[in-house]
Image 1 (cartoon, rainbow, N blue to C red):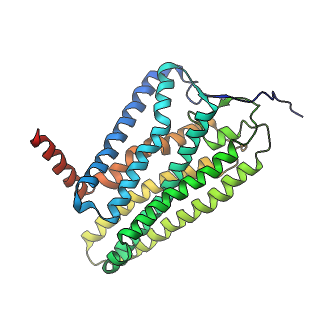
Image 2 (cartoon, rainbow, N blue to C red):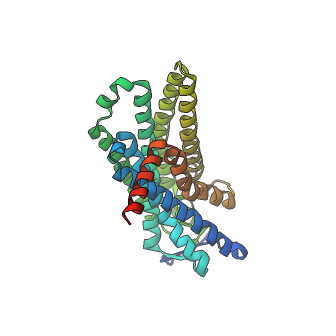
Image 3 (cartoon, rainbow, N blue to C red):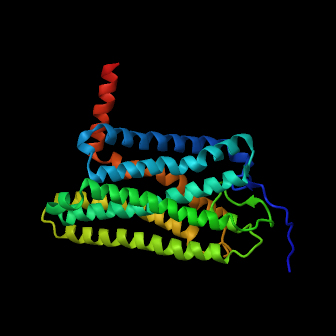
Length: 313
């Protein structure tokens, strides 16, 4: 029977990038550029939607929420990661680790529900265009958006409390570049059954429910598009759906691989880090391009805002 040091852990060491000292400066530059592009891209979307009255519709309210999430989620992890790469200091306090995990899981969960709400919005718009304004009222849009945020933060509270109620005495070395449920739970010297089952059951039920909502909505959308008479209309609609489904696929694939499995299962830490970077750092940078910057209404709004500010100066 294994014995562990029972001294309470007061600090964790994030070792996710500590094994790459020879490339930490190139990594710093790469992640700093990605983070900057993420802030600028999503900030531009928020600026355009906030200042252009024509974009004050349910679809663009959801896009604004998505852009806010895409700014918030990497902001939880990337600044600390950049500091670690620059200073080679990888420590994080117990409280800071808990807060980082809470907000990361909250923003990730909120995005799951928001993607489902966005899919439902497009389903109503394409399949019931004449009834869209009656179904997707401002009140309904606000309920779906706020409900996504509330559900995401409540779900995170459950997992954070359960995770940090465990006893940590094996080690304080977190095999990731941020605090997340699987690598933190793996350090526990007490039973992790409840924490792992909560991730599988609660996360599975909510995640699968949101995923099925998204999937079924897009199946109906595709079915409706196939019945369209206009070839040009079909091409544009399929192009938009393909872009949306690409982001949904990347997000769900990475999230399911990271969370919907026991932390004790055999896996490659290096592969885990790569996939977590994909949905935690790269996807928020791509979302403005895929969802919004290809939208001519958003680009026109940005052009008017930027032109107006330049001319006023």
